[in-house]
Length: 236
Image 1: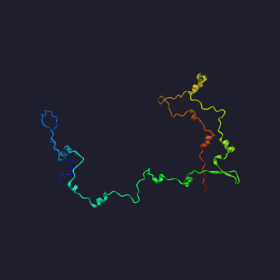
Image 2: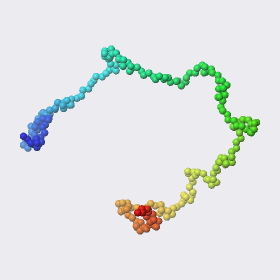
Image 3: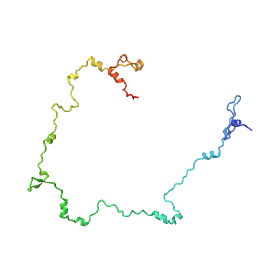
Image 4: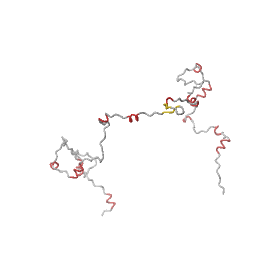
């Protein structure tokens, strides 16, 4: 009985059953030419089924109307189906929407307002009693003389511009002759020129500390600010 190792060492069987094919290199003579195929493969039934082309159905419905079967023509709906086919009735008390322009009745068109309705339709007028005593008479509000106080008149006075107010400056203005002929001094040119700095490949070290920074000493105020905050010590 073959051991487990011997069975695992056996080559896997060829499912396609290829014939034994020798090497294509010969030292003594050439292999005779063959007219047929050198390799014959036999497909499994499953591979043969998958290799077949799909069938396309060429049947096309020419008309959307189809014939109704005889049983469907003679079918009778049940009571349940008839009850489900009935439209849902509206809720009790439902009324259809009222048109936006309802027709007016002839009585409404020929109605005449009474004196009371005409009196209620008049706008209200606010009347104020003028004078004092029993001889006062109602006077409309528009006829009452009104006078503002001195403070209100002071607040109503518009503010005046400052005497030195010159207004907005125009966007485009004339440049003076002195500004056009001005020549910058050597100091101004020196201050306006950018700082010269070497590139990294020329030997510039961005992390180098200057001699002035190394010899600087902090002021008493800076030393005072650097001190830590005093903490309260808990007494035992």
